[in-house]
Image (cartoon, rainbow, N blue to C red; front, side, top):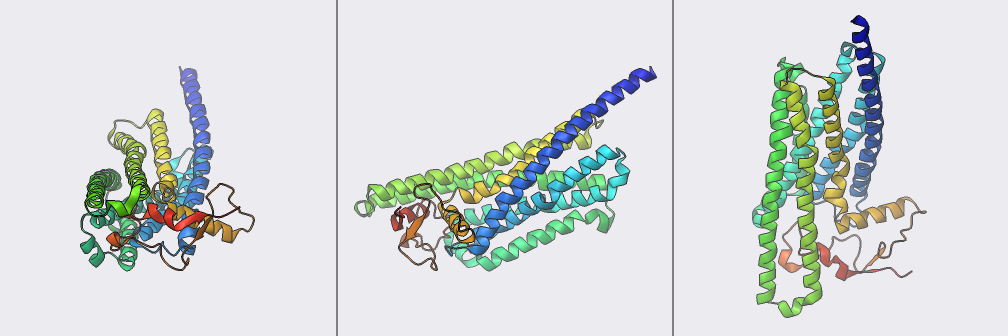
Length: 361
């Protein structure tokens, strides 16, 4: 009987070791992808070759990228280290302090990431619904203050167990319910509201064009606007879908792990898989928020050209000659001059093409 039990234990440990090694490799590769993707955005934001990335929305995106970058630089490698240590010595008590540090660090980055996404959504919704109020209360300075406040709050919450002595189980339950679940639900609902508000705004502009200046607009401008509307709507839907696919399964598995009767190898595997999937959210955020927009792609290309003389885009239309100085912001149409140019997607951003032409070979 003892021999049978030992055989089962050895088989489970072999499975645990094999799966752990797969997760170590996966998190290591994911760490590199997260650092590179978010690092490129932060470098582009810092250089800002087109002088158009100091808007409130771009500042919130930079705050989001800082959180994601730190997740890839420190958080995900820490997971790899924890798994490696568990293989050397399965006794968790030997790595308790490092494990707690990793938990607190992830609490800071995940909470700040979701809060910044919520703040960015609120700013965008306010911009669509009431541009006058937006212009009064939203500015680059207020965006910076907001990002700093979010990081301070996230750090304070993460160290609550050490500061107050609160029961760690209660802390985990509150964090899971409020930050991981409620926040993401609010973000999804908010971006659905943005989707419908933007559709109504775009319809109003189309109606105004038909009634007032349809002849001046012409089919080309209308085509550009419709394409930009499609891109914005696609990006909004994509953001909501990514949150649902990556974050909510992790929340469900974590609820099972916290409140289930036993923490088996199967639950651990499901937990690690769901956490790995959730971490992809931090790697793909730059594509959802930035790289799908033309001005960010152009800025990245210009930064790479100036940083590395060997980089020369070969894709047609990848290099641009601008008819206005790069030291000035992208020109806005008069009908939307009070809008942040991040949200002029359907009205302004796509019409940049009329002010640019591909460089000759």
